[in-house]
Image (cartoon, rainbow, N blue to C red):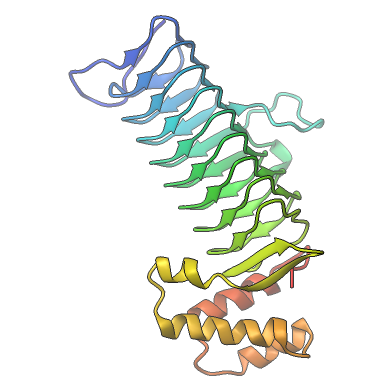
Length: 270
């Protein structure tokens, strides 16, 4: 076992004697690798990372600082894609993320851009799955058993509820909240609350989440007005967007909402 440091400190990395670390892995000196962990070739771990026990990390994977991996997480392994034949693909993860028990995160595929990306301050709860070529923004929460197929984009501060399956190529907008057990097959618009009652639908604004993140009352009111126009009026989506575009003081949040809907390829949940 050889551990080579990325961080210039006097303290060697703490590696349990039962752990297996590939000679080609690059581990910052301040990392802690617990019992029975396996760190494969071309894994790069930034300073302060901790693998509690029984964690498997494969590469190529570039993982930032202060990430914690809980027992039986499997991160950076090959994508679950029948067309994958060993191409060189990767995982890139930022800083201050929590990866809980039995989480699986796959590397990308050549046809999907080659890289799976995880941002900063992301909480991925137990038994969740992040499929190949997915992109997870900062401060996202994936609740227990959330399952993202390949090529899924989850924008910042979104919450994907427990046991939610998300179809491939779906986008989940910023600051949105998806209730537990909801099957997502279309794009989830930013700032929305979406859940499966009888059918999957958006049923309002994620007002509580926006307040917690410091949105002013004026900002929330403008988003609320846009939602009433999009979801509660008799206008179709195209007509509603044109009406919103004609309003001179709609603000950047509404602009983001409009751009998200206009860029949708799968359609949005209304």
